[in-house]
Image (cartoon, rainbow, N blue to C red; front, side, top):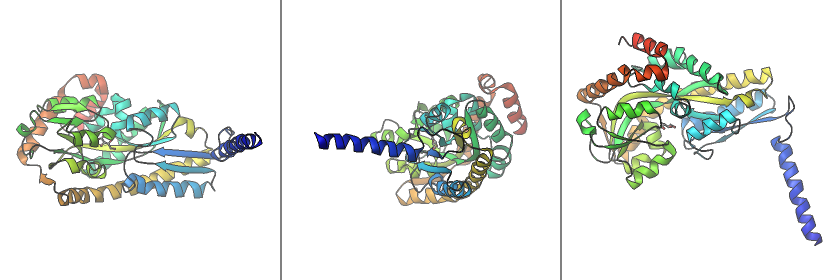
Length: 339
Ligand code: EAX
């Protein structure tokens, strides 16, 4: 009996200790805050690498008052779930592709319109450091999310297990996973694809089991998640660009002092610059690694590009997107693209 009471006491004490060190119940200003970051990729992905930079900057510059922990590999859920958790304040931070953001806020799905950016220079000028990035930041600010920085996911390509894709015709009848963002469904339907919307965290298994033949995704994520293991062909189509947001819950943001807010903002800026640099180095490396693993990696033919562009024009001109994304946004991007 005595030992039982001792055991219970020990457990109670352990919980009390854990609560103290994790800050549960100590919500007063200036108290230690831990920023828990969730992400879906592996430990070698650029998000995971630069999480160390972010952690080090934040912890050293706040003298340990703000702590950072990083939880990759989807242990905090898929990107959609993490973004929802950040809004609620159940997760402090999600490092997510703009696809995860648009899965919750479909009105931001325009950032993935096919052929929106010609190259990285345009991406940097218009998205990362330009009006599109600012638009996303401002929009999410009213939704419970403080975007500390815009990073990068990847230019997207096409992989599948059936045939090499060298023209639009080759896509007809293929069952391809697409992100849970409505615009993707329209784009691929226009190409005769059978689009299957799905979270990226379920995709590797779906490819393995043959639930889908292939997918639209960047080389980095394809390789990082091991999806290439179940794919025979990869086409470097670059049809869609996808960015990334470092999303901090406003509830966590509000726990920080103004000095701490500046520190986390600057740390995210530094980490995201490093992330984008690493990411761009990883594109060619990922395609090379896939080829080495036996995937036939092919360049996009002029025919394929012209077929994909024709399908993209249909999407761009569909009035339903003016409703979803606003007329101002669609007018501006069309004007800038000379369309
Ligand atoms: O983490 O869903 C996707 O295809 C994205 O590329 C993925 O979320 C990146």
